[in-house]
Every structure is written in structure tokens, then in C-alpha cells.
Length: 232
Image 1 (cartoon, rainbow, N blue to C red):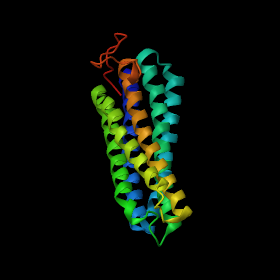
Image 2 (tube, one colour):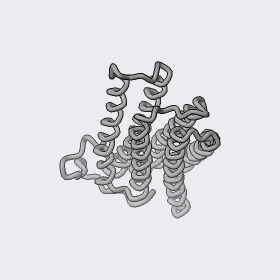
Image 3 (cartoon, one colour):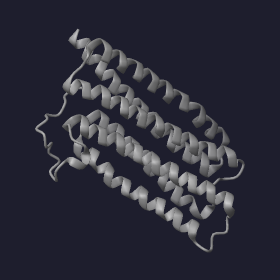
């Protein structure tokens, strides 16, 4: 019975990793669809979001059943509750990738992004994909140091987001209000996507240490003496 219980906990973690993989792929493909005005690719990203939603619903069902049957306490309870929260972050990330694809679809057959901003949006898309890949790795490895690195990586996304606004506020902006709205929304989608990846990593830090990321000392040592978990 105990082995089956831990297998269920492991399967929840596996679902989180799969969600991270799918939403990371989605943001990469949505970025390509947006920049290349690829309608077919945009439609595939939009349709694929249902798979992420299905994964979250299945994970929630299994987690709730586990709570009801096993009534976990201490670390095991923290695993289940934190996993539910991570799944919500990942599901929202999938929605944001879908939003990018919808902008691409809306502006087809043209690219939604002016040529002089395409390099910045491409970099934001690539960074978002790397952040989510790292978040997935953190879920697998429970590496607190790697999780804390995402905070630093997210600073780059914030810099890119500010760069977009500098272009929008420039008196030389010549692309019109509609494009300005598109670029504003796209910048926000990528910035929020990165925030969700960071949130996932922060939740892993809490799962492992019992402390939130900003409560750890400079050596990344748990302050409450909690030992790292060994399963999930």
C-alpha cells in the first residue's frame, strides 16, 4: 500500500514535468507563428492548449483523491498542495502561449510585430522557453540552487520588457496604435509566462525546504532545519 502511495505521488510529479514540457514547446511554437505569420502553426498551438488543460484536470482529480484516501500530513501534504499550485501556474502559462498564437492568427497574413522589434520578441520567446525548461528540470531534480537561478534569469525578461516600452514611447514610433496594442500585449504575455516559471521554481524551493525562496539565507540553507524531500 505504501509503495502504491508513493507511486501516486511520483505520477503527480511526472504530470507536472509533462505540463512544463508542453507549455515550453507551446511558447516556442507560438513565437515562431507570430514572427513568421504562420497560421497553421498558430492554430496548432491554440488547439494543443486543451491537452494542457486535460493534464491539469487529471492531476487535480488524482491529487484530491489522494488527499481523501491517504490524508497525508507533513511533507507529503506539502507535496500534494504545492503540486496543485504548480499545476495552476503551468496551466496559465499554456494560456499565455495560446494568447501569443491568437495574436498571430488575428494579424495573418501579416506578422504582428514590426521588423525592428522582431529580434526583441524572438529573444523574449526563446528566454521564456528556456525558463520553462529550467522550471521542469527543477521539478525533477528538486535543485534549490537551480530554482533560485530562475529569479536572476527573469531579470533579463524584465529588461526586454522595458525595451519594448522604450520603443513604444519613442516619438519616432511609426507603426500605429493597433500595432502598439499588439506589442504591449505580447510583451505582457511573455513577462507573465516568465513569472509563472519563476513561481513554479519558488514552489519547489518551498517544497524542499519549507521556506519560500526569499526567506533563504545566502547559502541557500533551510532556516527551519527541514530536510529535503526524497520523493515526488
